[in-house]
Image (cartoon, rainbow over all chains, first blue to last red; front, side, top):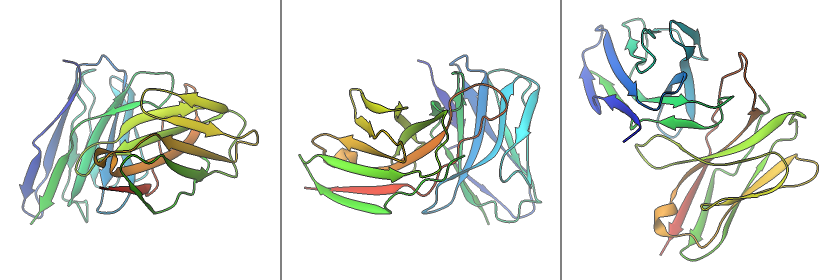
Length: 113
Length: 113
């Protein structure tokens, strides 16, 4: 089945530790995205990548880093520099001529203790 | 991206038709209108997209008046499983560097038995 997988579903970390969230897609999409969602809020774009080995900062990139070494994979690292890392993280991919039809993964809920 | 305004919440009953209106007064000539649905603790799902007049698919209809300053998402005969947050987004549907999506807080639709 084609789709996007994110792992793990729940993640707990101690303050000050870096943590990497996984995102894999087998939809053959060029574009991939990372969003953050806080309770009762909409989604905010962290990073996006339109092609392998290239990515751009979104609206809230500070404290995060990404890589895009393979078309299928777009991991997100939440660094210790991110002041409020506890949130719901969503990965998406898109294959059209623009960003409008994106396919989202199930999300990872990160809690920093 | 054009700013959108939606009601924060709406209530409905099973079997009713629900219309959610979104205003986007500063929509640009080549902007498209897109709607997403999000269930709790899941990623958003693309519902429908349109440019003008009416678009219909198996899930919903989208009505866009001639001036395009607003749009209405219509859900026919809703059921309890339609309880979700609905997001209205406006922007260009073309390639290039503008690959950002901006999600507002959306409209929480609650369907009651």
